[in-house]
Length: 251
Image (cartoon, rainbow, N blue to C red):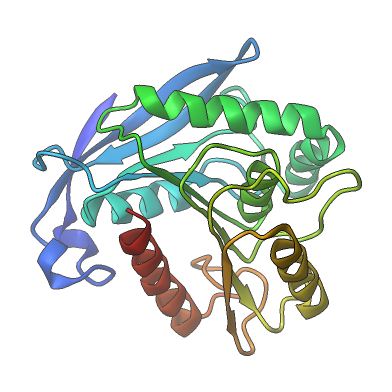
């Protein structure tokens, strides 16, 4: 199912030049390893060619309207956005225990985690408006997933983690990472502190991976998540603008 979205309603979030654009968006089912997944695709069909493809990995609560909204915002900027699913189309998490069980299962089985990420990345070639050039980004759990894909050697043009989990599992490193890694992080994040950020930056430096980081003073863990107790408008806006600059430079 596809739908056409008038972006006039998003003018508070987007530059004026994008305000009158229209995008096509809808759900996209695909299979990885015998499991069916349902993602969300948004692109501007009025453009002769998309500026590039951006994959979005969801937070630990699964695919929600948050990821859809971010995908719509990227499409308004001229990108093809693919919010991927790593839980499965039948997953319907309803609360913290479900979130912990689904995310914990993937953290406990890194081979499965990487299979689902790599399968979703491969599927991006089949979505409307797909391009060869691709960047992956994610929020919280999705930010950790982005780094998982980077360590797994995903053949992408960039990796962007927003307030993600930063710990590197035993046996993993960044030796197979071949594209720039960008980290957006809050200095008051109680989940992944500044020591964790310094550690991953050291790992990237030692591996010879191009990287960067922006730290937002006083911002807590979920500073980009609308409606959360951690939401920080200034940090959200600044990190979004920096993401667009990263994409512009990458594509």
